[in-house]
Image (cartoon, rainbow, N blue to C red):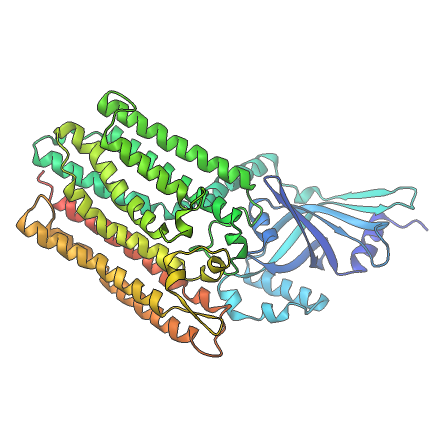
Length: 507
């Protein structure tokens, strides 16, 4: 009696419960041994969403799996090719869970963990095969293949999906959601510049083309800085050693997740800085008649590029020697605000009144450092291992092998109050001299309750952290709300400062 290919495939798949799953993105391939359960022709498995294979599946669902019966030594088995997707419907998740538990209970404690589920750490996946091949080197027909055309995606859909995923990949790589750290100081510098033009009766000299060039150049510098940071922390081993990465700390994880080759991250960083330099020289050409004219813009641009590249790259990396916070404060505060202000006002007005822009940049610089400061809390163990001596590492004491965060949290509180205190000074200065401040700056005090709330959450978190029986694998994730609030403080305060300087403009 002849055995059909389907029966042969069923014999192999039903004879074991583990497969080797191969995934790949951008030439970065991975494989992992996972338990599986059958659901008709589909294969189901459980894994952790931050893993390399899960991250790669998110950007490229095309996978391949091999299944070999025990004691066959690779002579007879099955190869599955198909598309893999995370299961998201509650009923489908429940059904997949039961099928997997019927095969193995090795991961049940993680499946039942409400904390992991609530934070999106665990996930269930389905492989829908497009082709299953039975392989038997002793048989006359060594390869017998079943096709599943219903599971093949149309070429156009696949192309559009790949293009979308490629775009999303680079958006994540440059950490575009954090570009508010650049847009806020650009808007602030531009708003003050427009106000200066209006005060001089020259508001018609406002140049939108120059404004958008400034935006593009600043964003390119920010993207280049983030990419350089990822590459530098990869070379040092810092990001590989980080066991508690999150959307706020540990880098973009593009290299660690096998989504981009390290050399591509470095090359992209270089290209971003080349774009920044090209924009800067173009602006200098338009403003001063020569790309290399010795204008303040030239020196501001040089400073910005050096701060961005030297943060984690070069022979003396600023972020590893206690100068990272200073570099971030200067780069995302005065450098951007003054640069935007100069380009959009000084060449027209004939004299550069830089003092108001510098003063307005200080709260923005304070709050952007506040973001980096709290984000470094979760990084402390990995930073210590690679001797990355930022100021959170320097301030955090060690007691019985446990990091003590009392001083870093106290400095977080102090830095936050300093930022809002300087907002008050801007408003007071505006009462006595409208050219260096504005009473409307008091509007930027509205996010102060966010800081107070973040401090209270941080203090509660610290109490939990210091408990003798604290679960220090999970507690870093409970700080994420403070990370998010701190970004909100910077963004909202910055926008309100922009509004304040807009309201003072004499249109």
